[in-house]
Length: 196
Image (cartoon, rainbow, N blue to C red; front, side, top):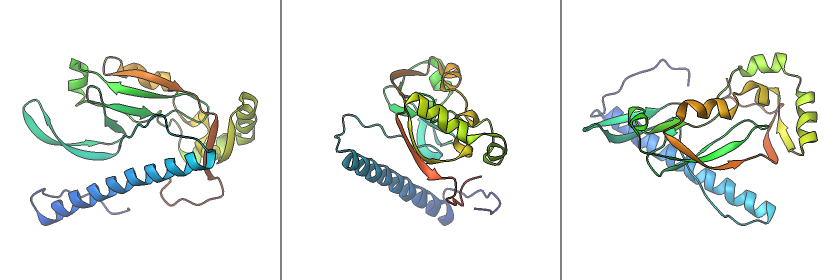
């Protein structure tokens, strides 16, 4: 995780190993989302009515403009025409289900869109400046059940979803707008080595 960046030739064994490992990691992530979703449905005694999967921070081999390329979408997810995706907001903001549309802007963006609201404050800064007790009170007053989380995931540390979607007009269409009612996250006292 702390190693300097490296370039690997795709034809070299190390490059092929990387692609294979990335593919397995993507399949593992997909299976993990399926397992978590199934478990949550069981806990709630509910049934699935819709399903949307989308990867982000991944690379795909694709054709664009007559050429074949590896497209690395860091902080982004594919949004090909008709392809559905989920764009999450904060725990106190809406999330949306979208689908990609065909347009010159879409092609110029290699049929990509954002995967979430995006942070405006680091986790360390949030822990120093956000009054998380007032966040909890505000969410409770709105009727949102919150389990876990901490100041580093407070709504104030994320952009508003409307501000994020605006620049993507003409590349995606919103199918559904979702408001969080129950938010479950790791607690502030739980250590995660992958947080910044």
